[in-house]
Image 1 (tube, rainbow, N blue to C red):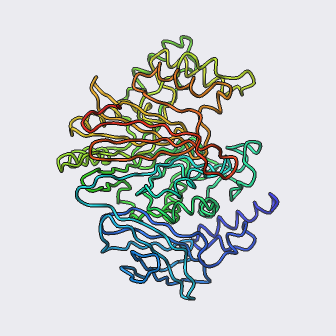
Image 2 (cartoon, one colour):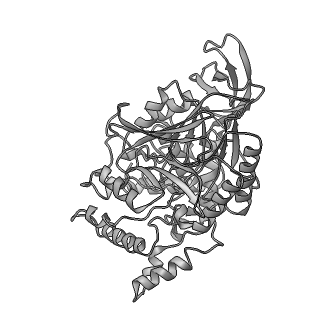
Image 3 (cartoon, rainbow, N blue to C red):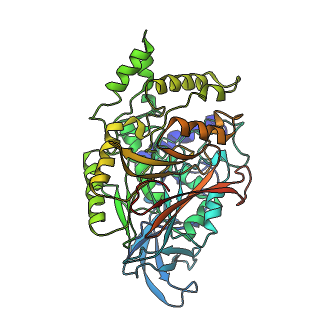
Length: 547
């Protein structure tokens, strides 16, 4: 489709989306997504509890289709244990979701959907959460999967495993950019095509982007084999989102609050998550027997204040060190700035306290952004190649100047909200929590000891990305082990780092120990489940620091 035709179609789609009709059914809109009928995108499950789980599919027909759901402990469905009926509605992009209750705890189940014409979906596998004392539970942890940068080999590798109980996706499940923006057309891996080819803005755009991602066979297989708990980060909306705007949203693109509402609506359509009213919280707790409380928070749309901008400290400043010192002591340390907001922060502290009071071994806080503090090391200037773009060199120099003033380099992470971060860590200390923070967003692998007021407060396992590039994109000639060593010398809470791998974490819990494994894929430029290596970090119960 040429650009002029696409612009014409997009105007029609925008108008159709405004009136809430099935815009993606317009003729000639985009690839085969509209021409498909029946079960188009496999099955998925999510948000498990001890006695229930949410089941998902998409069934396209000429109108509303009433689907039958069957759930069984055996793959041949010889004895159906539970089920129900659910409609696949055109106005919901033909998505069907149902929460099946009355299940047994800690049990694997198979499930399928049956259409009115007798056609049957692929068979999915899911699991309820356990109750009581258990010896082991393992999670696969993912973030930052930008399709044009490469194949979802991390998903493929995890989908083959038999030792995982649950999948956790910490955000940037997809990216909003136009084709050729991030990555550039030269960087994009052949065959990794996204739709629409422009930045997603409208209801139709967001739906089509999810459809193109969920057409990936490895992502579909992961959803088919495991229950998923997920939360958006920023790219499900727009880069560097906060409650009142986003870096990648301009006035010419319309009302940000309309875009934000559309983004959340489509996320809830296409992901195996519960629908929630506008006054219901997005955050929640998942109890894994007496082994762990898994607290999932939302850090973009509800409570996040606008990030501080380091560039503002440089603008018009005759004395850069003095300007940075003023920025550090005033703007950066502003106690009113929050990432979670008051209501969610109170809920998190109360949930940690209730978890420890109940005798639960571990308090897992699953959230989006790196919590440990990171300043650029002095060696950073040597990492930037001579032919690097000017903006890369400027960012490196700004980050080095900031480090000399005791400032971090990424203000979109928890480093931009230091007072709020310290408050959450003090809440963990007050609860006597065995806190493990699970994070994504940064594209690199990290392990931190978290402390406040000179006392240990917990540890952080932060995962590298599925495909999105990390430090290696800015320092391609510097070995990642040298970058990691320099970062650890300059950041006393950082215990381990990997700045050059793509992959995922698996986190294994026992009553005595929690272990995180960072699995690095050998390649993302072609489909392969080969592992280049695995790194491991551990924390013992009651220690609050990495072993």
